[in-house]
Length: 270
Length: 342
Image (tube, rainbow over all chains, first blue to last red; front, top):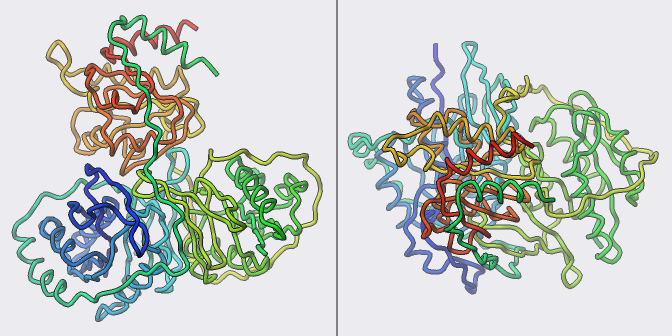
């Protein structure tokens, strides 16, 4: 008989990748220029984690997915308008900064507190999912710290595949060096998985799912706890855009054969 | 005064790899530039004596070790106990480790357990005004920050390819073993899944990164797509040039959607905003349009060339050293011929 899992997915927002980003200095530390004006999207790896969670819940009747997210309330609402149409979940919103310059341990403390506040959480059926890194801070630190705070010592990062076995154990494929995967077997829950890309395409929008989700999304946003992530003890000496603009030589008049010869010579040079 | 713990795991053969030796080089430099600091070595692995002997001349005041069959596996539940024990036994204030997949999996959890802080994917650590300062990238390699912290221990994971590896004569040194009692473990590492040797397209140590864009799968001058020929040209080049393969997100997404595209391409090949940022001396981009989310994947490629039919391609906007305005099929066909004749 399939297990009815409780799957908590952590994820935040990032600026749309097509936007030009420029750092600015503020009294509270570095930030992005016009940060509140930049269109936001769900963090890509957190998105993969959410879609994998929804798929796991679908395969195991009785399972439920929560999505726990820190972000400015207005931005969360904007992103939820899109994401809520993809897969069923219950939102747990935390009103705080989604900046890449925030401190991972402080974000982890807020996320762990929110997860512990979910009524009826049963750790023997609990998967905690998230992206293995964010596209903002990109440290891969927050999820491990959430796991530590929740007492979860079966943790996996860079996960591309989770397979539940007939005996209830599960197999995990984690990315390692050289395009390979480490294969592990785990026999007990709770477990924490930081997802890489996984194997699922982005689900199409489903207005019915959206309507169902919005019943809980709006109340969750209204009661979102406001938090500060002050970055105690952390100081930035500088944050700058890279300056290595190349002086590109554009070659228009060479034949393919001549280009090929030049490339082969270039490849062979030490 | 800082106590710097160089913390590394051994490779399968019991030695320390290139990434670990680069981190040791950085630890030595940092220690030399922070007055009164001491350097301690911490090793984790099935057996650690060979690794300790390999770096016996590094000048560390102590060599600590957690060794045993249980520590041959890269597993969170056992690795975190080893790191916690080494951190406490060394009384380290700064812990430097290589940003390997094994350490990336566990070190943030260890920072939490040790009551410290962590910075990962660091590209440098140096003393500034008598204090250590870490350099790392934010927003997926789009901006670079330099930061300091007052909390200790401060764990820093250093990316490979950012500094010179420590080198010195091997010797013999005594290692202080730390005993760890493991609880009942639920996780077992059962193996490594790797593509077949002839299908291995990701080679982190390759001299050249070859990046294929979605243009390889588009209709060509004859009005037809030539995905089969594209596959042969790309795979043929990878074998002959011993290059590593990267891809744009658009191309791997096409593969994931089951379209008739390049069958060997997976999300593991993806570079850029939501993919990898590999480090190679040279990079050749073909059929890529080179927008910002993609080109961040090139940030750590030193010499860059591109082939594209569009002279106004955004590769021409200061991202590549040379942009060849040409048909990639025709050029790569000839490149493969020339390489085969060598």
